[in-house]
Image 1 (cartoon, rainbow, N blue to C red):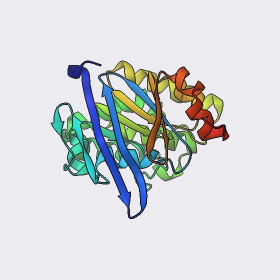
Image 2 (tube, rainbow, N blue to C red; image 1 turned 90 degrees about the horizontal axis):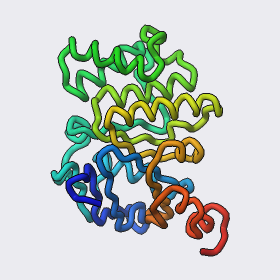
Image 3 (cartoon, helix red, strand yellow; image 1 turned 180 degrees about the vertical axis):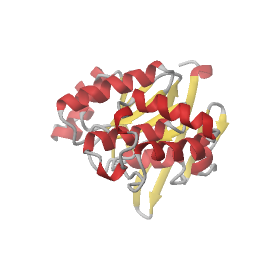
Image 4 (cartoon, rainbow, N blue to C red; image 1 turned 90 degrees about the vertical axis):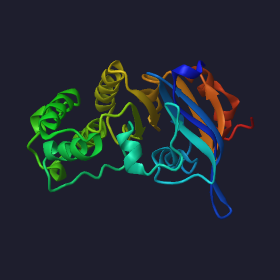
Length: 243
């Protein structure tokens, strides 16, 4: 992979809480426009990986490079403004604010745009995520699919160049997953690179170019999605088949 195409690099990232190792010597490279999937059982270190990338956790060792700049010591809010956007596994919007107001907060404080720019940006995102008819609805009253859409929309309102998605398809029906996949494909067309953690594998495989399997904080295997899914390492992780 050509170095000048790299957007994000993790080099030897490790993290432990006492004797519990949650990330062990992780090397990862994300290229411009790439969509990278992350799979693994519960407790494999998937969300910890996102916490390390976004600055919610600091690694014990290793470096994180964003478009050539070392951001290992950069605080989370600065990483957001530098182009790292994230959705969370459990949507936690400002329930007493409307959908539009939730997006406005993200645009004003995450993307740091003017009020006029925020209105235009939020309008575009509402349309992209299928929330235009819910703009004035209180976020706390939304059904699950729309809460997931809002979680995605809030991340987009920070104008990320890299979007981290944490199990955004969880709990959705097949039809709802299809709509979500189409939305994520549209986001990719805009040039946004994506790292997507997901247990709904069929949704993940419909989008990603590459796949990483994590187990006990380590990368068990990585490569083309079909190769990773057929690998002995993944069989061992999910089905107990000896590798």
